[in-house]
Length: 138
Image 1 (tube, rainbow, N blue to C red):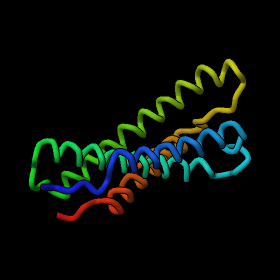
Image 2: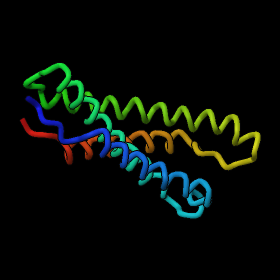
Image 3: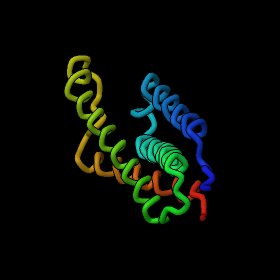
């Protein structure tokens, strides 16, 4: 039987930590007062989502009672999971930039295509490193 190294509880704590820091940065204007903090936050978000992707995949492996899953398949699942969440997050930022940001006069979250692409890349790197840190060798 495949033993899960990543649990939903561990992943939830990581996600909660990222969301707490995100909230603090939002409410204190930290994203604008601390240059470059956006990058590490996207990396941390990708890392936390990588942990969640590992937990989801381990749960499915246990549920399906699969004895062996290729390491490449496992990595592909986690990276795809992280990519989906990262794209959804960027859509979230886009919608906020074109609604509340306009209505309330807030600064934009997506200042350029280069910023969006860097955010996506940092999320994927964070997810890949989470996979490397928490994967279970068969």
